[in-house]
Length: 265
Image 1 (spheres, rainbow, N blue to C red):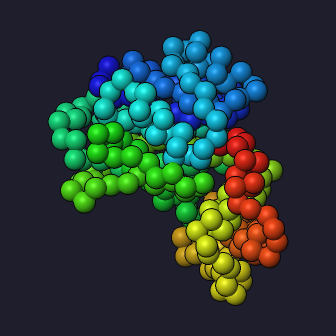
Image 2: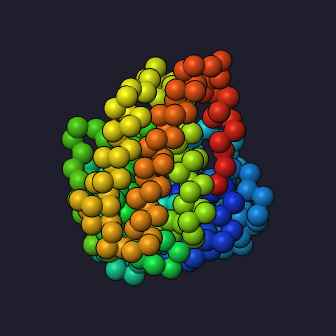
């Protein structure tokens, strides 16, 4: 085991979390699960597999992840989601790390899956994120959605070998639902920040992002799944600004929407 704590945030992840936990057991003896009132036994599965489980009311992705970091036994944090599984190459790379420089963060490549099919092109095929960091210097931002790591200026980024396998969606139905869900969260975030949708946001941005993913980044080579992903990107972009216009033109408040969106991650 190495001095790294794994932090996982969950909401109804019983189908996937055990595979994720089993992989992280090869890395550490400290796995923290921050659960948001799962109703499918997620917390019980995590407890049965030796994790420390804490309940936290929904405060956004970043807030829940920061709580996990604060409760961690070690200063080094590997942050993953319940549908993400480190592969063997990554596990071995983590065991080879000296972890003697807290000013370094580690970027990790992702392999994304649509059902059982690996997606090799488009946005999903190029995915990578900084997921290993020292909590003494690095925290998550705390917006409603699209949380990012707040990196001090002296931080250096290093690339790890290996991958995190991300089992993104089971099927087209789940892919579509996620597009709607994240569009609502993004709209609420923009509304709170005083942003409004322009003509370019509504009509040019969705098309450009579809074209970039499907044509420029060769998403069409992923076949039917590539087409579904590109359409979903278009829908997400359009809906985000559609919902933002609705909020701006009505008496709805983003904080009302925030309370309604603590659903499956």
